[in-house]
Amino acid sequence: EVQLVESGGGLVQPGGSLRLSCAASGFTFRGDWMHWVRQAPGKGLVWVSRVNVDGSIKGYADSVKGRFTISRDNAKNTLYLQMNSLRVEDTAVYYCARERYYHNSGSEAFDIWGRGAMVTVS
Amino acid sequence: QSVLTQPPSVSGAPGQRVTISCAGSRSNIGAGYDVHWYQQLPGTAPKLLIYTNINRPSGVPDRFSGSKSGTSASLAITGLQAEDEADYYCQSYDNSLSGWVFGGGTELTVL
Image (cartoon, rainbow over all chains, first blue to last red; front, top):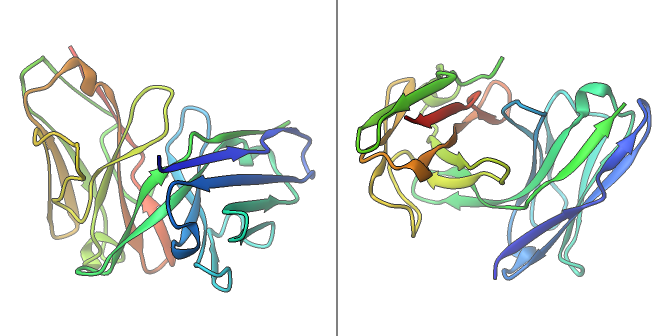
């Protein structure tokens, strides 16, 4: 079964740090670009970060740039999000998602999602 | 304020047809980037519903369809069922932000 399982969420004070993990199974993790997407309570989805297959190319939303770091360990089939200098507005459910690239059109969608990890900054 | 604009809510009776709009701009949908749609049932993770504007992943009923024109896109749901009650999100890429963007989400209520 194709699956993504996040862990590492919790309650942290403003200015603190937290590291999320996302364990992948049921597909060839090392062959896929991966993303983090977050959703504040009662709000919509917001893209956070993206990493390529070997971790050498990373992208971030402006709201987290310089504070969050995405990484991956292909030997462990695990995606990470290191979150530093956390703010109250970072409170959200954080989802990891697999990128599906459509060659015909050159676009990307998120075809597999984890259940999410709740991060509360208070 | 989301980059892509959706109506906050729509509703319809069982069996009816509803549409959800997704308005973008020249830096995302209008630039030619595809639109994808997600369904988020209460308390669950989003699920890919429509990809590359019009295509359905395996297992998605053909009651769901997508379209795109100019700087906007739409999701149509025909033959509404109670199980369709969910939040729906459109998603594209924005070249001015160099990132992936979502609509604010539309809550569908089946009356």
